[in-house]
Image 1 (tube, rainbow, N blue to C red):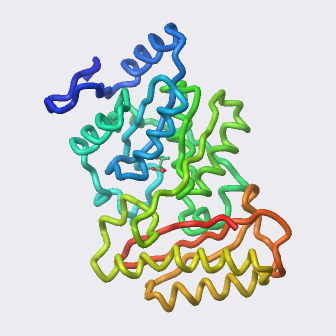
Image 2: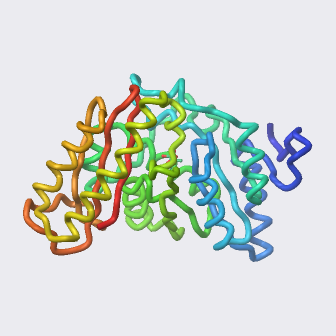
Length: 294
Ligand code: PAF
């Protein structure tokens, strides 16, 4: 499709669907000439309230909001869930229309990654450890696609969720290091009634898995309180790991306390500055992550 098309669903009265970068560029160029401020919210679709809160933040800080929906193959390892990752283009359109996004950008995979695509963008340092250790291919895939999306949309601001806190730090470093002229805004994590961080992958969970999953934020919160009360980092991390095991998680990738800005590991003693507690664990063959500010 080479030109913007109104989605066929009659309920959509505002949102425009765009599938090529040339169409996106033409639209952005018009907005720029009109002096409008543009926001980008990159997503992989299967949108939930967490994503919609990013769109609302984008709307509050810009005149026009583009939401990209692209399940990026580069950030999945061969054995991961690329094929079964939830997809719901029609549902996403309706939700984005309801919250007043202007463009849903759904790039064709062939246009994003041509057959001889041979470039990757890699951010060292903050990408190491945590999810970078557990999923070594992941951040390279994210930074490559986010660089492409930023260059395609040329937004003034881009909004990312604190749920993926390490990803947020990696993207901040990316735009700083490469002088990409975009302001990165961080939106707080949206949670279910029991505190479970909203995630498209929660859809994979059985009833039992869903109950176990709801304990991750409890362990993180307990760790944050213990640290704030002066308990030693090493002991709190061990206890957090044990709490996840007791809750019934199958495998734990990490339960760690790191510097809130540099993501450097902290010693084993009491904290001396702002920190963040991070966890990643598996239940129902589903990997869940979350984090909590201290
Ligand atoms: O957080 C996500 O959904 C993805 O990692 C992102 C930033 C859209 C890149 O594919």
